[in-house]
Structures are given as structure tokens and as C-alpha cells.
Image 1 (cartoon, rainbow, N blue to C red):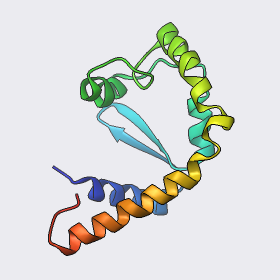
Image 2 (cartoon, rainbow, N blue to C red):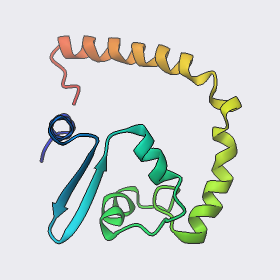
Image 3 (cartoon, rainbow, N blue to C red):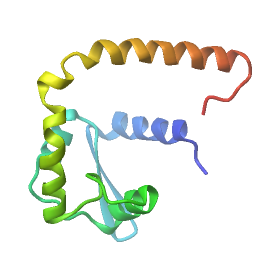
Length: 121
């Protein structure tokens, strides 16, 4: 099994070599990997929510429940409508400061654990 850090490293190599949009073949299927936030935003704001079998394989089986990531069709739009108010700008505006502070705390903890020989993978 490839560790997460190796997968991320491989993705960064692909991005450096091919740019912000990488098309990969997985058997007879094509897989599009997007790196730029604007490209990801276009996909996420799309009305097309019929995802491939690969998406189901990656997320449905892994999560084991139907959620916004795995829902399709009317169920997706119903859930999206329900969740969207929680992510309105007025609700997430102050999260950046808290997120950064907690991220720094997490980094300190991980560095300390790593220095003590504990794996942080």
C-alpha cells in the first residue's frame, strides 16, 4: 500500500510535469485530476451530478453512507440546499483565524511526536 505522503508526492510530480489538468487512464476509463481551485470550482458548481463508477468505488464504499459527496440526482440537490446556509460567507468569515491557530498547534504536536520517534503518517 502506498502511504498518503507518497500519493501526494506523485500528484505533485504529475502537476509539475503536465500542468493544472492531468488526464490519466485507468483501464478503459479516463480520469481527470484538477489542481487549480478555479477548475475544481467549475466542476463542483456543475449541475451534472452523475458520477462514474470510480467515484462510487472511491467514496461510497469508503464512507458507507449517502452524504453530499456520494448523493446523486435529486438527493444531491436536496442535501446541497440543506447544507449551503451553513457555508455562507457570514458563517465562515472568522474561521480562518481559528483554523490557522489550530493548524499551528497541530504542527507543533506532530513535530514533537516525530522527534520522539512516533510515526506521524
